[in-house]
Amino acid sequence: MREILCDPAFVVPPVPAGDSGVAWLRATVGRFSEGADHARRRGLQEAILDGVPPESLRGTGGHPVSVLARAMGVTDPAVAGLVEDVAQAYQPGAGDDGRADPAVERLVAIFGGERDERTAARIGLLVQACAATVALIERTRHRPVEEVLRDDPPVPFTKRQRIDGGEIVVVPLAGGLAFGAGPRACPGKAHALALAQG
Image 1 (tube, one colour):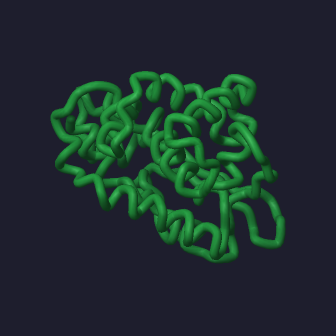
Image 2 (cartoon, rainbow, N blue to C red):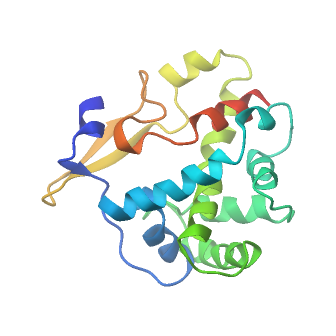
Image 3 (tube, rainbow, N blue to C red):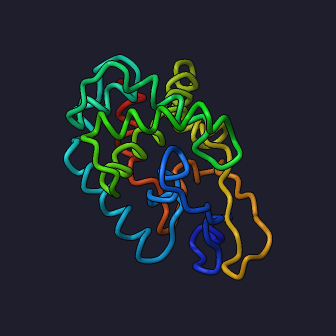
């Protein structure tokens, strides 16, 4: 399945445009975009992560979202709960958008009130670090992290679609693909592992 993740003929299924709430977030992050938009938006996330040394996240305790948010300069105690509200609906059709929408709006305000790609990148990083990192922490309490990533990854699969709009393919992420592969490999792998060790 690695070849699908590396093949430019397969893209992330597109999301509709949105100007507020979780629809705006999906339409503005790198996770659901392609081409130049994806490269630019991923670059924003990589720049944010470059300012957070992974070793600074080890041994800090607390909810991984709160830990990462503090490292990004955000100390509002409501952030972790708001991010959880967004995370449950981040994947289209996965959860309750009505619960996520006001949480996105509050997070935009907490991050300075600018509805732009940088704000979306910061929120997106926290959302992607939410459920997956919590699951990684729980699963590695009694098993080696390598075993968990190989056999029971926190994100069990991802989806791709042929660039011509063909059928959607479910790509399992076990067996060494826990953090993806190719141009969309998780940019926060070192940070997630540091949070799990913390």
